[in-house]
Length: 88
Image (cartoon, rainbow, N blue to C red; front, side, top):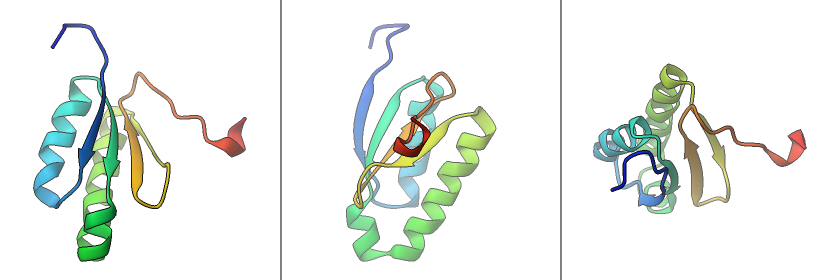
């Protein structure tokens, strides 16, 4: 990948094991659209733990997270802020 380029990546959250990849992608400055639908249907408690871990990572780096549908979340590094519809 090109140095200094920010990518928007689509990922599937299948379990807690995917948190490491999400953290790596965020540390590289990429924006992530994460499909949580499968985990939400299969293991809602694991989804909650995963989202809590992601939020902890985001607090540490100053990133942001927002739901964009029932099945997808948007995760952004510190260089990107998400404007929610009620903030416009």
